[in-house]
Length: 138
Length: 138
Image (cartoon, rainbow over all chains, first blue to last red; front, side, top):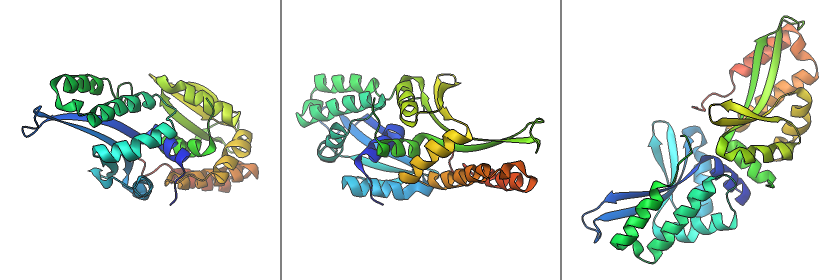
């Protein structure tokens, strides 16, 4: 299955999620780990679409989400900043999910500069993350 | 907001619904009305996307669905057979929603031939409608 960029943008406008997780991690200098991820969840009957996304972006994994739902998931600063972010800059989202993407991108840029390793940077990321994925009643 | 066909297909693969309703209608010869409809539901914050779909297809309405959810909805055999069905024949869906679209199209074709007005045709449509929108756990 070959996907066209505009199809991907449309599908992600509907089904995609840009999320920034922050979890305690004693081995990190700051005590916390910042974990941005891009996910698309589908019923297992459409797992082939998730594999096509993985083939398109050339990164990420397809895994069980929960029950009969599967997820395509991209983690890792390099994957996100080299594959996912440039794609959605070139093919902008049309729904308000674009605002989540812009916050997501800000966090990735901060991480590229190592700002998530400082207390101030971590606090700023926490505030950005809190403002994401609102108004999307799922 | 200008929408590209592939974006629409991707978005509808995620968010669209092809549905055939059958309701009692004493004024119809068969006693029943067959009501096919194409809908896309979004949170009200993205109502502009629904208006862009309406502008693209040049038919249908944007209405409150329920609560803070809005719907773009196309009904009417002429709108469906002249605008919606040809679009998705030219730009095929990539998820299993395509199977719902194919059943939807079969019903529209039967209605064009007036088969929904006969008892046999109505029964066949009822069976097709029963098989639609399964496996989509929403």
